[in-house]
Image (cartoon, rainbow, N blue to C red; front, side, top):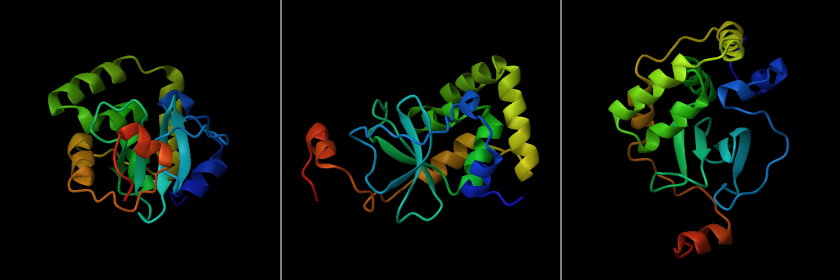
Length: 169
């Protein structure tokens, strides 16, 4: 089966155990891009596509530890799932933006150590359904995607500019 977001949705797998809650309803946090298309949630963190960036997958985090509240995670949806399979959930992937490589490795080791049977089952379903392989170095992969990223096509609400205290372009 080809790995597209539409095929992923058709599988109807509950991926909340891997920090990717399926959702139809989206509470509009101030930092969620207006031109985003939701993939799933982890608490208030939105995983999404953004118009103008093809298949790239983003995180939008209202409580980000990074300078930005919106940042790319993967070149495409298949790679995003491969990162989840490699890291055990979307959580370590999303946190790479602000972590050193050593901190990431520590976080990843802790994450993998506490994996539940449900998580392992979901990860195996994803691997099998889409013939996914793990990404050799998820930290380097995500950092490369984020390096020199041009965020000029992301559209924000007026509230975003008010909260950030910046002038709307």
